[in-house]
Image (tube, rainbow, N blue to C red; front, top):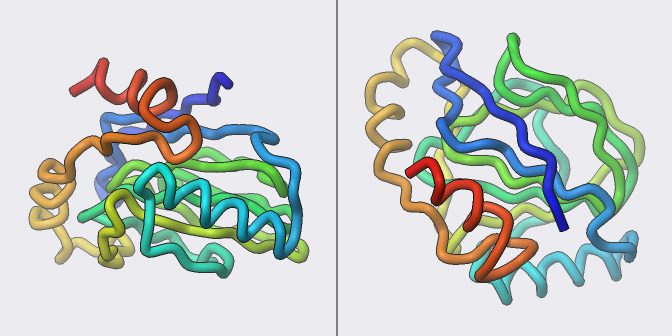
Length: 168
């Protein structure tokens, strides 16, 4: 399965990442509770743990100490990735988004929308919103986040293993 790749540069407020966001379209077919359970199990099998169920905040935010995966198990949403100057992206049930540390994400509007989120090796996440006071510490944090050993969708091969390791 070939993911869509989106690249975002530092915009002065949001650091973003040298690594691309990966979007897997329609990579699973279960919806609702069965879909959420499938995502939790699949992510965990690929060592993306500390999972949760909810939506995406309606303000720009990013994590400087971990990457994040979001699996849409219900509904649709219009997300904005990369901050105010970033890209708007429609997502729906069956889609999975892999977000590198530093890349902002925001829910611009949704309908009956729910995701399972998780982090490589079950890391805990911090919360940043692009305030000037967050940097340069967040830049240091982002630089120290390792590339995961497994892609949350494809496992040991493909996905971020293929695309992010080219960039190191």
